[in-house]
Image 1 (cartoon, rainbow, N blue to C red):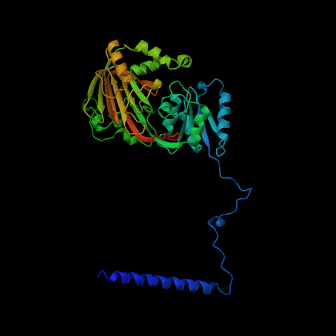
Image 2 (image 1 turned 60 degrees about the vertical axis):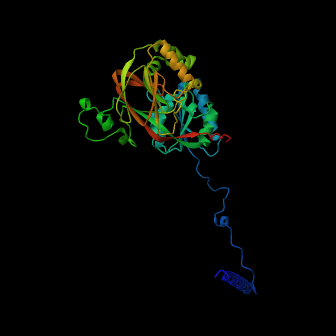
Image 3 (image 1 turned 30 degrees about the horizontal axis):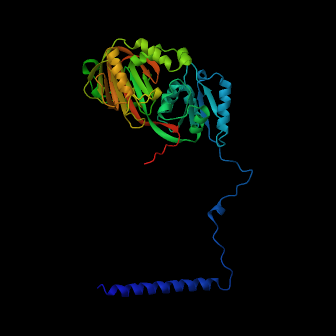
Length: 396
């Protein structure tokens, strides 16, 4: 049987030669006695000619939400923003809206979405950024971030430039990155907690499983707040509350240090942590911190495992009694040790219910938002689009 393969191959080759010869003969006969057929036009010839007076494609629109308290000369800042945007050519003049004491960015962001803009930029401190992000969460409109505050913690964690012009350039030309958003609910109602988080002795019957996830895609309740970097209760919130805007403007991050020294040995409080609906974990703590990302100012990393787009919240319970205990915690954090410490416990979760023996101040991204005896924290994975620079390529 194998001896037949050379013959079959020869027959196939002969048939191919005959077919090629026939095709060539037909081509010659068709072209004889007449001009050659015109060459097939290129694809571009089917497109209409671009005349000089033809309308250009519409330019993109950016809304800029500016915190005027962060700048000495607001008029000059507005002019610089406008000239920087127009220098990109494919962007129209920006819509600039200023924040106010009454509205730190929520209404301005909603108005910008109603305008149908392609991009919303927040220029201000962590509070301004958080307010704008609160509104943009769950939408397809990206946020540009130009840090101009004291902490600038989200900008630091995303390695964004602090210069206004460079920051606008990244926002206008950068890539979209989907990041997680933290959500804090103060004194959540039974309807805002899952069945596993309810206490039948205090919350009544546990019939429907109506966790806070059911509110996704809708406007949050008044007791619900988005955060991008960290939220906390206890000492860190007391420090934020005691630090005045004047002090922050005068001495920057050092204002928090001075306030912290006064509050360092305040009373501890009993707390119960229910992580992802599990059994309560009891602590007597100075502070509970819940983080979406872990880097603080000065290169200090409180949560070494935290990533801003991993769909996980990192939790730290800090429990020292006195100065010696605080010193041990400080050395542990500064050494960037990821494991637990006798006075510092770390957890990772998608949701956590923090129950306290009495009301404590609560802060999110540096803003004190009130007091509560219970706080539910949850993560909304990749719910916000942020403009960032090109990723840094490292050699393998």
